[in-house]
Each structure stands twice: as structure tokens, then as C-alpha cells.
Length: 227
Image (cartoon, rainbow, N blue to C red; front, side, top):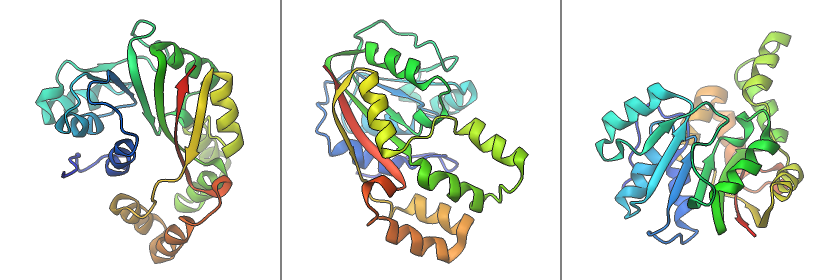
């Protein structure tokens, strides 16, 4: 089925959808997407038969734009303050967080709150960049060679993780059955992004990075369950 997204999406919607589809989540699951932006990921799930879906984002303008683009999502997307999660404990079967973990300052406290929203046996699905790769990439790609620019980067990506720290974070929050794995980097979105920032040399690095060992893999994809 075709992947739908808005032209100016920040994230790789296609990768999120294709990864989610590998997990075999029942279409009856009640699902929350944290960091939903315009709701493109949720709209793709809706078109695949998922109806009990909701989204949260700090960007109210993005939500308004998303509801205009995807009328079926109207009333399902909620703007919030980035801290207080406006749902009762045990509300969801599945929570997705794509490109969110790295932006949360108090990530331990936040993940503990996320866990409470899941029912027993509930599933957390996530993607977050690897600090080992993300920091040098953005320094080179955006020419972040001054103290002010570096401060901006670490303010924006304030909770970047390594392979080991991500696993420990999820354990501290109370998650079990933690899987951290690869998802193909060779996608149209990533090729376009890398070509614009690093040129053709970046495309070669992108292709080779698919074979990096997990601690050096550019993006951590995975899932974990509530005990």
C-alpha cells in the first residue's frame, strides 16, 4: 500500500510504517503516537485498518495542518506541553515514539510516565539516533564549528543514547523484553537528506553504514514490553 506523507515532513514516515508492520500488532490495538507532528504515521495506520489511534505533539500548528490534510484524524491529535501526558494509566496497548527520546530533557522521568500509560503486556515501539553517529554527522552536515552552534545542537538533541545507555534507560523505566535492532537506512527520505547535506560521499557512507555493528549503527529501532 502507498505511503502518504506531507512534502515537508521532518521524519522518515515510510521507515516508521514499514518497521511497525514487521511487529504484527493487531488492528484492534489501542495506539498512541507520541511526537505525531502532522499525524502522517497515524494516517498510514488508519488506512491499514487501525482505528483506535491517537497522537500527541508539542507543535499545535503542525497538528492543525495535519488535521486539514487528513480529515479522518480530526479530534484524534492533541497538543501538549511536552511533559504531562494527558491520559489515564493503562489506556493503551501500544505507544510509538519515533525521533522523540533524544528531545526529552528528563528522559528517565518521561519514560517512567510513558510506561504507566501502557496496559500490562503493552508494547513500546521506538526509534532514536545513536549519539556516536548523530553528533559528528550534524557537526559536519550543518557546519556546527562554534560553541554557540554546538550548544544549540545539544539543546535540541539533549538525550541522545548509545546502544548500552538506551537499553539501561528502558530497564530503569520498567520495560522488559527489550529489542534494539536495525531498520534499513537505504530509503528515499534518507538518500535525499544525506545527498543534500553531505553530497555523493554521504550516499556511499549511508550504504556502507547498513553493515555497521549495532553499537555503531546510526539509528536504533526497537520495541519493549511492560512487565
